[in-house]
Length: 299
Image (cartoon, rainbow, N blue to C red; front, side):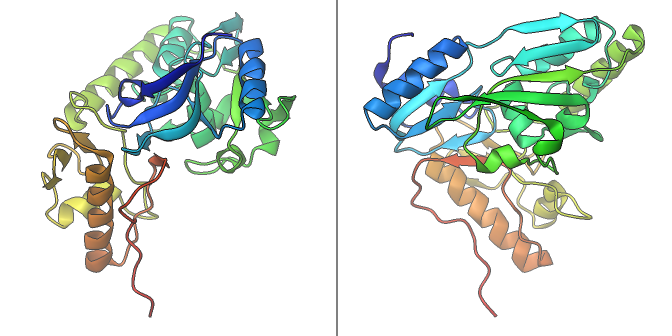
């Protein structure tokens, strides 16, 4: 097991470049590491947070008063023709590119999505009509309280729009197995190139962010509703609603987590007052926040 560090800043472990310190922090690089860390945590009665690549989270300015297990060191990928087992810490985009380079389809629409494969499975990441669960076969994980391994099939995981049953279980995913169809390598590469160009043109990828802040509301788009309220470019501190895409909140300099949280609540309030739609955050909040999310007044 790697050395457990103390008082580690979490800023550099998230795509937002925001967050306080973890009381304890460790990078796990194997299944055995995870078991050892879970046993240490139980012995020392520490609350756990499981960190992947930190792309869809906002960590509070107060940080995490417990143990953060960083799974970014678990990066093994085992291919057997179109069958693949991918460990949780692999970057999703890296996984997509490797599949495309092998002439394997089923993931290409996910090109450019930040984050890890483990986080993508928990959140059922998707884009352009494709989700990571489309060709998922099973997931291997570990119970945080007992350190016992488990394996579940896709049918057991209740996948939906940007969610799965794993999301509500503080799941610690170790790996995921996929069966992917064969495709035309040149066509797949062309599709990936087009998607990356589209993301570059429409998304503020040059600034730290968490990706899309809000889930897509039924029959509409979060970015469009925010833009209709005239909020593009609106800022609180160094957190700003992107002028390029209104469903992105960027860290323009030294934004705090409270800056971002307040901007999220403000966008919720303005959109609800304008359209009656209560935007649901896609970003995951980690730790304690002073600013509440917007709640519509009771009728």
